[in-house]
Image 1 (cartoon, rainbow, N blue to C red):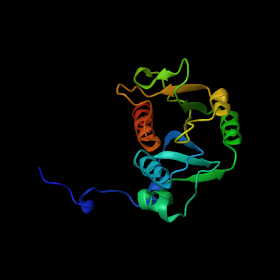
Image 2 (cartoon, one colour; image 1 turned 135 degrees about the vertical axis):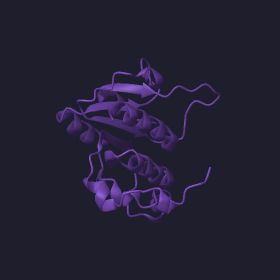
Image 3 (cartoon, rainbow, N blue to C red; image 1 turned 120 degrees about the horizontal axis):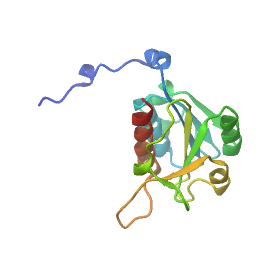
Length: 176
């Protein structure tokens, strides 16, 4: 097997990316503090054609040198918007019939591996929370549902960028 060069990957340019059909999925970042995590999530959203990212609360916004370090230009391809209030964004999305899924460890959360009924006819939003506190209880309370990523080791959480990669991949495969 020969490793491919970047020129052999046949990637589209930013202009083409902006004009193609996106996955009916929105990512909401609820007070993410790490600039590297934000950049990594942008790259994941680019890879799986996420329609939009909402950066909320203390979540930093492009242009930012530290975000760009891990985003590698995806802040230019993926549509994004900042809001001081995560709650306002969730309420706005719900008013447009977007189904809101908070990614959090809560009682009665759906296990990610068990979810098979993601409705392809509607748009979905997945909410990822702060690296220490997770998704705020206020946002969990107004979400349509919650998802917990199954874990089998000794730790109780995943890095938020890793969690975003897992969940976005699952939704992409279910919606496309």
